[in-house]
Length: 90
Image 1 (spheres, rainbow, N blue to C red):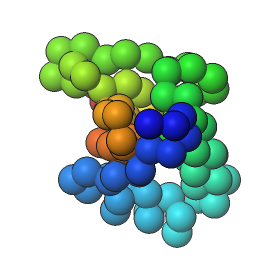
Image 2: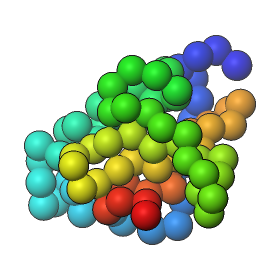
Image 3: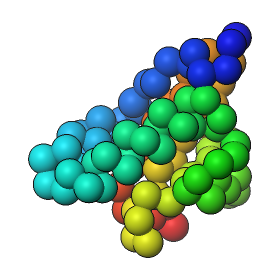
Image 4: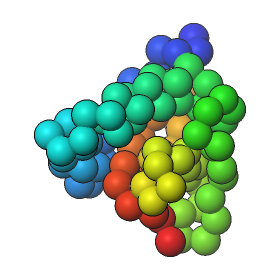
């Protein structure tokens, strides 16, 4: 698969969280969209301090949206699966 061509798939309530950012905080929403696009191109590097997660989130990665909120995602050969995009994973 060509880098940057992965589909974005929202899991569980992550799309609701995404839409809440769109409605409530445009600045955070723009940062989130930018992080998702960057994750699509380079899932394991660049901004947001990508971090491989452990324990109950084994197989997932996270990036900082803000001090309080994280983008949590899984990477497959064909997609980036958004697990969460509000709050902290702990």
